[in-house]
Length: 217
Image 1 (cartoon, helix red, strand yellow):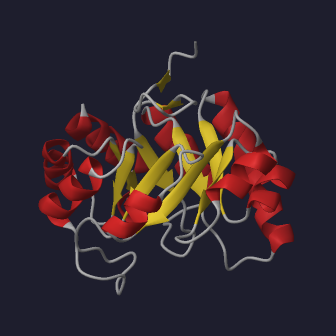
Image 2 (spheres, rainbow, N blue to C red; image 1 turned 90 degrees about the vertical axis):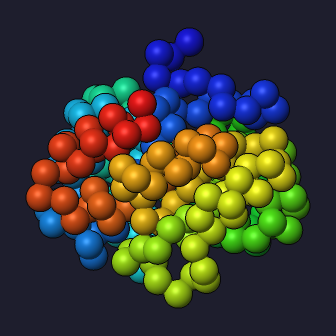
C-alpha cells in the first residue's frame, strides 16, 4: 500500500491521496511557473494536484500535463486533469475531475478502476444523484472566494455539513480555503479540501502548503 493513499470512504474502491488536500492549478493567478509551484507544494507535503487550464487548446493542455507529470512522480504525488475523460486518458494522468452534470460512469468505463474520478456539485440534489463510480465530490463555493466568484452563495459550515451527510462519497470543500476555513471544514464533516488561489498567488507556495497542512492536521 502506498503510504500516501488512504481510504476516505468505505464504498470508494480506490485510495484517495493523503493528505486530502487537492491543489488545482490556475496559471492566470499563478505568481510563477506552474512547474515550480507544484514542485514547491509537493515538496512541502501535498500529494495531489489537478491541472485546470480549460481555456488552453487540448494540444497545449497535453504539453503542460506532460511537463508537470514527472514532477508529481518524483514526489510520489498524483496528478489529475480537470477536463474530459478522453483527454485525461491521452495525457496519461491519474484521473479526471468532471464538471457538474457530467457522466462519471462513462469516465470510469473509459479510465478504468484505478483512476481517480471526481465530480463538481453545487446542490444537495446533485450530491444525492452522484453515482458510486465517482471517488469524490467537490462542493463549491464553500466560502467567499476571489478565485471563482459568481458560483452562488457560500455553503459555509451548514451547507457543507448537509452535503457530507447526503452521500457516502468523500466530499472536498473548495473556495475561500484558509486556516480558519479549514477548522470549519473539519467540524462540518467533509473529508478534505481543494485549494487554488491561495497557493497559486502565494509568494512562497511551499510555506502556504505547509500552513494548509498544519491547519488540516
